[in-house]
Amino acid sequence: MVRGMNDDDFPANILGVQVSEHGPDSRVVTVSGEVDALTAPKLAAYLTAQLAVARVVVVNLDEVRLLGSAGLRVLFEANELATRRDRELRLVCNSPNATLALEVSGLHEYFTMSDSVPEALNS
Image 1 (cartoon, one colour):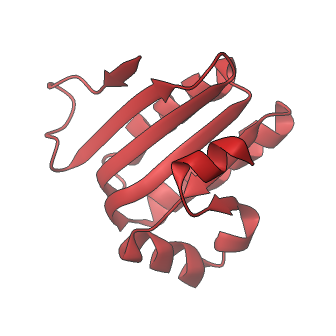
Image 2 (cartoon, helix red, strand yellow):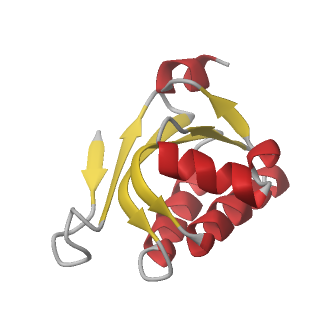
Image 3 (cartoon, helix red, strand yellow):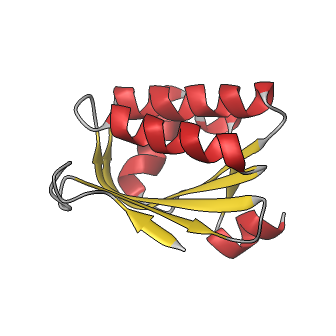
């Protein structure tokens, strides 16, 4: 099952979020576009909802063009929420801009990183 954002939320070129189920306990949240102060709350809502129903949530950032400080905060807080709920948040990040943001902020080391979605689902 794949769910995307409503057309009324943000134009797809600003932020796109799709959720797909992979078995009863795993979800993949695919993010595209820009995650900044305007769009980060929407991503936070998606991640919180998925962490409520899935043991493993993979966040695919491969199509993210901009990962601002608000987006970094959302990912960090989602990771903390996952830990408190005894769940796992895993990141897939082959986007040069998102990778740079994670590395420069020093947050890269706080996440479980994978090279691909299948690897993240199977680890």
